[in-house]
Length: 390
Image (tube, rainbow, N blue to C red; front, top):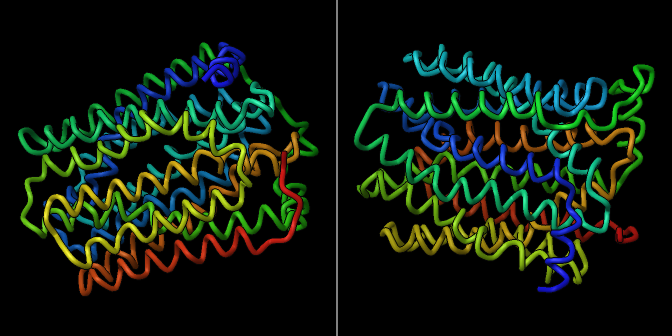
């Protein structure tokens, strides 16, 4: 614990400002976990809802490309501010749509705008935190995100159960706007790249020669598919088993509670182990957790599944961001993070569209696919022969 306290003391003040603003913003992520439910309750089918949710993920492709470039060229804080403020406006527009086709168009735009700030946030942490403290720094950031996640979905579930879905959009938009103002006024611009070197062409030359990073890219496509299921079919499966929807928020919040309690100390312990083995073990457990649904649809099955999933998530994600940072050149951090965002967009989009369609016809098949993808992600990470980063 003394070593952990030492590392926490060495994290700079702007990092803590970012963590605090991120907490408020992520607490207000009320819409995404219940978006599929919102769409189906407006009279659309599960498959149509899957297409609309997939459109949000598809917008992330544009966000990764644009956000990665803006983060390197204009600066981290400007990119985060524009993304958050624009995302607030887009979220309110989504709240007024009913037909799935209109929702799909608005969801695409919202995803493109709302997610464009993520490369800048990750790149800023890399800019202001020394390499030897990044594992703990990213764990602290995830602590803030998941503390918010432990409170946000439970609050959103209560609002969804007892008031109108409209208030989920209002809170989501308000917290995004708050983050945008803080980013603009109180966060540093971070490292900027000259215009001649800021294009995606230079980054692609570097990325295609970076075999470990490409292996991580493939693993992230698989884990994104798995992770998206907690925001789509999880709530639908909960409702299909005739369980109270407000309890869905509580079970989702369990994920955040566990991460808040255990991830930072776990990250401090796991940093002594080989990084690729740690990532592989986490990926396998995340995917395998869904197999619990093969035997039961009771409330305790959902709780047990979420416990297993969260242990896998903490194991893998406590190291993944620092590992990705160790593979990125200093002058391409935003674009490297953005390119890794393409992996998450691909996995999220496929998971939303195909995963929900599979769930609609045969949920058991979907749970097996999730488990297999966890194994594939682990294989991609451990099969690459290269020197471990420090």
